[in-house]
Length: 126
Length: 456
Ligand SMILES: C[S@@+](CC[C@H](N)C(=O)[O-])C[C@H]1O[C@@H](n2cnc3c(N)ncnc32)[C@H](O)[C@@H]1O
Ligand SMILES: [Zn+2]
Image (cartoon, rainbow over all chains, first blue to last red; front, side, top):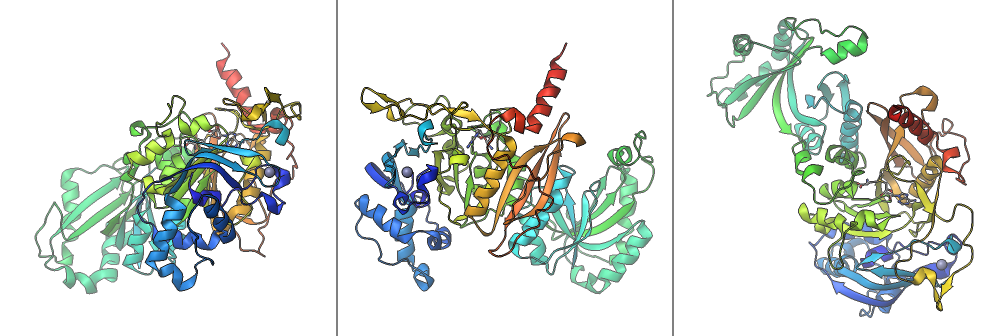
């Protein structure tokens, strides 16, 4: 699972969606891997405006990354190849292979195994 | 400028929407001057030759595009039209190498007749060498004869075309401009694909779907019913990054997958060298989606289940049991390895409502949803087109089979503040989906037919 995907995910429990505590989900026991990909600056430029920057900061911090930019890059900053490359690495090349994502509201844990996160809920949470 | 598109004579109701989608994607001002479902030739107007190339480059259902040099219902008319349109340009072509070819749709011409037709254009006065391979300029005489299919459709009972000896109803002279992407269909042929299942969508229609949905470089696409990833692969071919999920993780991992082996869906991306266009796959139920209510998707492409080939299910229990958390040896049962969450049947229409509501929450403005759904040729069970106030229906295309048919509906996410006319949408409020059979008109119909056809 890539870090970018986690930026669009929250708790699948219906009652949690409205609670601010349910986003972002929190990584626990995460095993990371860097998987290199072709550099795709047009994608980064398109997607960064849709990223929740605060959530990205929290997640990057929980995963032990050095501090990322304080403010979401915009305008000319999104033409800066260095910035785009760093974001590409963080968002698309950072994989979470094993671990958990937990909801800060209900405490439910979503398992990640071999890079695949499981958001299927047991019946008592549906 | 006017151009002739030569379509493949297949998937007729998808051809025009595909070209219109590609024009919208590239921002090309397209005017369709002539289109007929029974003819491969379509006359259009676009501002420039560059537009004509761009328009055709990604098309799957078109074969190629020609600059229109002349048209008519007989050769006299064609010649007059050629003089009128192009006489002032003949000098430009005086010394280039060239070739003339005749393409007679549903008609046959003897070699001498063909030669005579080509000869009849000699007044253009090209003096350059005739080259059968890689000529500088490639001219085509396109003859449109009435097909047997057309005769049978327009006048049921009459199975014969006028007669092969008769003349075409329409003739065009075109200067070849560019080929389409039709040749990639065989590259993505399911027969040669590493990971498929019985519900994989064929390569041709997956690619058409990706065109309708405006898959393009820099964009993010999602399939909530990803299965073996046919749509993700097609959208990735056109440069989008793709993401998918499914309630059955085995559908994208592969049933026999061993630990450490790449998931089945990903091996398809590897096969085509588009790994960098794969974003993620995860397990989830669309009806209980973990995705945020945020407009972040450029496109959603899917073929939702409808209960014939595989069960339409959502999370939960049929009788509402299982409301208590189960603990085994101090560990919640749902955290134990091998735990499979219970699923219950769900209504087909309820699922479609969920998909449209999801799309309206997650698509960016002008983002597109392409959704396949069954329809029945039989009128009394024909399903209405599901609608949503934030989604405009862009096109509906139908693929007929013997016993049933399915359609591809393309929607566009409207800007905030605009609403589409949903007065024709079905009124049924069936979001509870208690019993799939009660709610699933299509399934009832098909099961019924199957029963009949399996009866001795
Ligand atoms: C017609 S198949 C789609 C096949 C896919 N287009 C492919 O290329 O393989 C429908 C898929 O929807 C999945 N499905 C069924 N109910 C679902 C639900 N509630 N949420 C998500 N996926 C579901 C099934 O497991 C199945 O893989
Ligand atoms: Zn929660």
